[in-house]
Length: 165
Image (cartoon, rainbow, N blue to C red; front, side):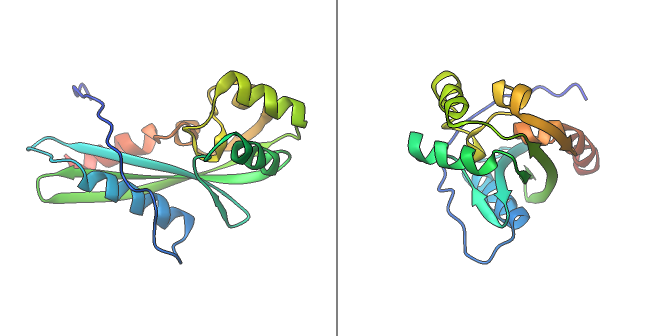
């Protein structure tokens, strides 16, 4: 598309109302992030990614113990990754989400500790990055968008941007 862009980060409260589905949570937080920016006529794109395992939302870990608990739950499981994306330009706002299923093989406590020690996944939903050791060694299969699991479903974003601009 040939768009110039810049990346900006802002601290945003990532809490959400109870009763929302995983997709609604991802979109809600993405919209809260969008509210933190002033568009000034430019297109603003915000996103938030969450992991859902059997109805439990796994956000970013609070600490090492929390990361260990999350990764132990993901070991040998199928889970879903939802990314909510919000596009803003002037008064126009458009939000959407993408969903991907991820299948992980079983791993040992030692492998989990190795991963945490070497990859420091404290800024990632579900405590893992699909683009690093966890994704290379532990993820057995992905059904849906790989880039969605990374945190921005670029294929879907491209199509949504074409409609938006």
